[in-house]
Length: 69
Image (cartoon, rainbow, N blue to C red; front, side):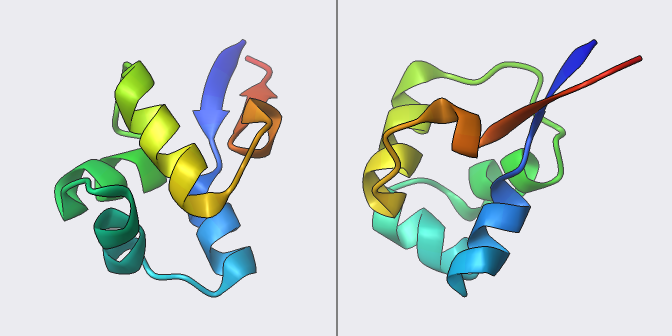
């Protein structure tokens, strides 16, 4: 099993661009891009908190899914 971030889907559902989220959350565009493409191997707590705050998310299950195999 592996954990997969679904940030790209969440942004699409909300009509937001990666650049907009980066500005809203005070993150670099590169960080948001790496999260959207699942290139990041670790998820720093401060980054997750910034994204959750900017998108007004209170449940991590909205941002992640568990993939089998």
